[in-house]
Length: 248
Length: 247
Image (cartoon, rainbow over all chains, first blue to last red; front, side):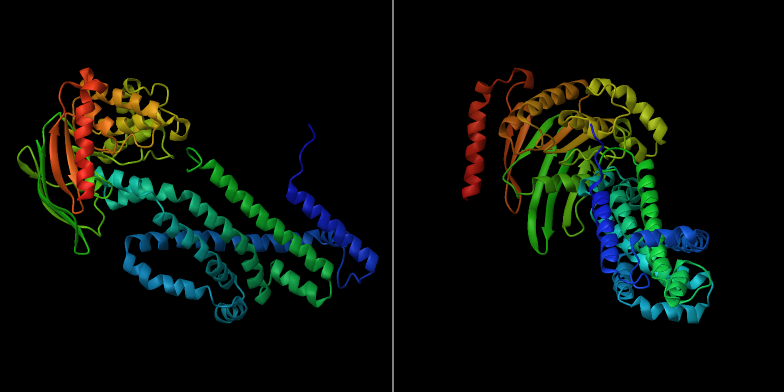
């Protein structure tokens, strides 16, 4: 039997062919819109510089994302056990999501300098909320019978949380993690764009200033690859830590 | 003996149960029947100590004459679904009650593993619940209930999700298990045939507010009850329920 190609690969290939065809047929300047072949050539030629900057971006994104997940988990536990805290803090968290990054990123640089801290803070700000929300909604959706069963056995709230609430929240948590992961790399690049010495963000800014659309797009390709890799890691962790059937 | 005296449960000034009293004998199987919404499951949930915070309850529970509070180690509750945790193996699920009581997981699993075979669950210790049939899942849930060791079982429509054949098999199986390990049972069911096949005594509830309107002893031992013998009882129960519904 012939191997089946993934539909997403087919669509991506079709888009690339259309894009390449358009740039060749219209003769649009490569400074405005290079074709995929031009982007790949630029990526290969600049691979060392792009890799150096990409590693910096990976470092910031990983640190920020990990801190965000830990912070979201600790906050979710606090909000779960102290509902008055949830009533007070959730509106603030929701409001924090309405702050435009374009306004906040330069302020972060102004307040905390060009180091790691402002970028990590920005990644936390962007990725924290989806993880927190997925955890809280997961806690709220645990089947009542699971909780009642343990309560009728005399289990206290902490034990019920550990033995039923947390494991039952796993699918919801990983969904939130996936949503946040798609923001993590983009948020890092945005933070670097606002002010940094290394990273894909600052690389994109420099390439743009030099009218090198091919390098900008090469960095975008790498950024997309990093996001997909992060999603892949999350999927792998989900599979490796799974116990039981489809609900686990 | 398990006794409830003057149980009133209300939500926002509206009584769900009003002044309900009943007593259950050790080792006897009692079924609670009645129309939907009359408070049958609420009685069980109160006895299990899992009444929602939104409900206000007042009433007295005594076990062998001594005042008791729910949840109580002598009372074991089985909710409407089998409530098997999908992330735990069958043996781990069965051992849950022991674990909550403070037995380390490994020891709790070791204690329930020899009980799998008598419950028709041989070879399933390491399987996850998704791999079991409906009947096997119910048996695993019963094993979890029995393994916890309470003298009283509260069963909330345990067979309602099963197909007809599996339901009959499970009813027979439960009778055999209870003959081997006698327990006092209070079971909620909507099925009159199930009630008359299993119970020593049937309490008919009506409401809201929920109250007991009839207390009927089922004649003869379970094993010898035939459909023809039970037909008059079915008729009596049906008339009672319809009468209360029309009132």
